[in-house]
Length: 119
Image (cartoon, rainbow, N blue to C red; front, side):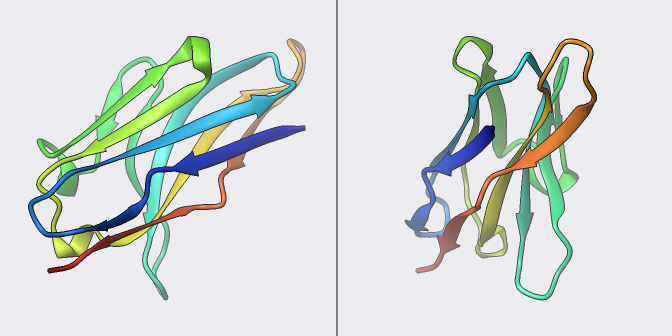
């Protein structure tokens, strides 16, 4: 069983910062790409940032958000600075996981964490 659990969401004012964390736990062989997505009600889920061999960002967050990972802890972070009202969404963590060395890769999702940006 593989679990993906996000934390760190909350309410902040425009211009403030927030840091999200995501831990992958359970029994698995390897994790490749770890990523953050976000989704607003009635809209498609969009990629915010991912980290395989290197970080990659959506244009809308470049220069403001930083993704990092701690492989020893199977954890990925998203540092969000200079938050805007349009950044308010439910943020989801996803990890590409291989359960066994000879097995397929599967994407596992967290339950999401709410980020609200409002004055």
